[in-house]
Picture 1: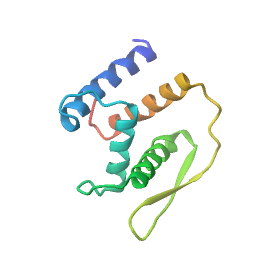
Picture 2: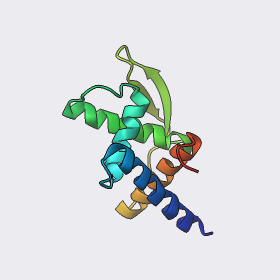
Picture 3: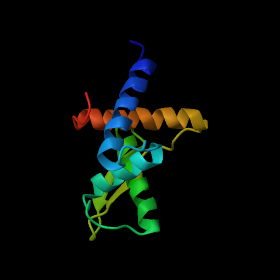
Picture 4: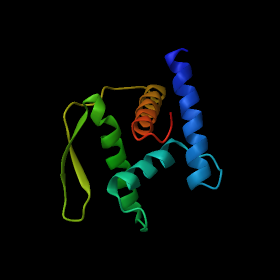
Length: 118
């Protein structure tokens, strides 16, 4: 199976599974899944977040997702338990479609490693 085809199948499976679990069956979009990963990485799943915290959660998720690609490196946890990352390499200038594919690939890998999907 072609790599793009496999990514597409795994992405659709992941969206369906996460949407059923967290969105009452309505399809989560890419940003919604990134937000969920941020909450997971912070580990404070049962609290409400303010708007600026939601953006911080998405930043945490993006750093965590792109860490295996060499763009970010975990640095430390602050006193509130929030993870901080440092930039190792600047992201290349990607077109919107290329960014989307990179993030979907990173998200699928994240959930494969955690064994949420196969």
